[in-house]
Length: 236
Image (cartoon, rainbow, N blue to C red; front, side, top):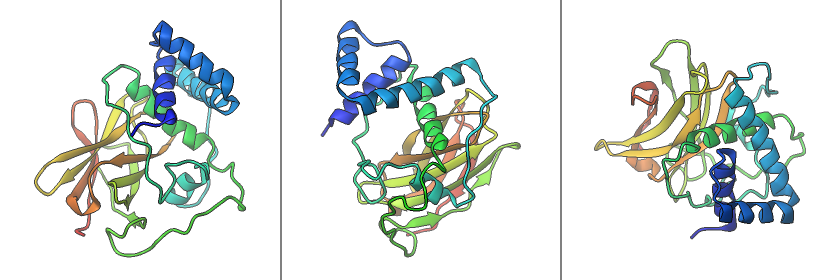
């Protein structure tokens, strides 16, 4: 079922693209005024989205030397319902509005901006371990780059509700949209979301509604459906 956070995310996306209706604008302003944390969240995303639109390449993001999972986990609020081991917020209906890809890209970059901000004392939930397909375990996979100049790495996590990917990508065309897709043994495709190419490395979490045992391959594709990076997933 939908949650208040679902509606907030939808309103934020429309606001960043300037597509709020008068009724939505009133609703959005009411939520901002009533919740300072949400207001600050929108301000941060608005700044990142503005830099992306302007092609501002002069800013950098702090990076930790840890592995991909640790860097992403460090950027997650312990109270976030999408944290490792928890059920995700139900995805919004996929509407092909022009703000969808920029919002996803901005969200990924926003996660990257706060990496390194959490100290050693930050909350760390126990992470299961085991062979591929173990629920909650971080699975290392080998990603092959199919286009020169890019560098993509990823890890996947099996959940009861689907498969999650921890993705890091650099060298993608700035402003270009890329889609992450899981492919089943029978060729069925399961979209996991989109990211926007940036001049700085993208670090984000993406989810697909496919059980790990049914996913055989992961692909990152450009807008022409050309595969720019892929990974063959070990059988479960």
